[in-house]
Length: 153
Image (cartoon, rainbow, N blue to C red; front, side, top):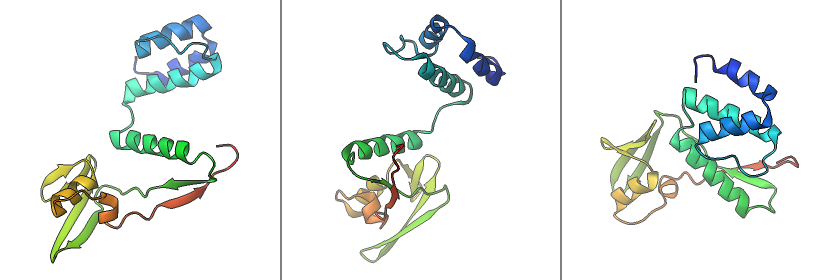
């Protein structure tokens, strides 16, 4: 991809279906899904081009999106979507356990506890207690928000 990605993306709607299919093959290293409509290919290709030029979503964001998708599948009849609170890097979580204070700092890559980086709070809770715990439950973070889902979800 060249340096001016927006100009390349702006040209996508003028591409023929075959040009879009060829570009899909180039960008994804596999053919486009069978029967995909042209109107869907354009934004998917634009996203992929931007992803290649600027980088994709952070692993933590992708994991959260997967979790939300799983929750949506489970709650398909529900009108509410549960959203976990997100913490900015630098946020400090404290927990008193068996007379000892424990502090966790949220960092870009996950969490830091006593100089070691962890990908999940559950791993830290396990380190502290020696047993399997839900990290969010251990640190008192199970207070999820509920958001009303509209008809256009």
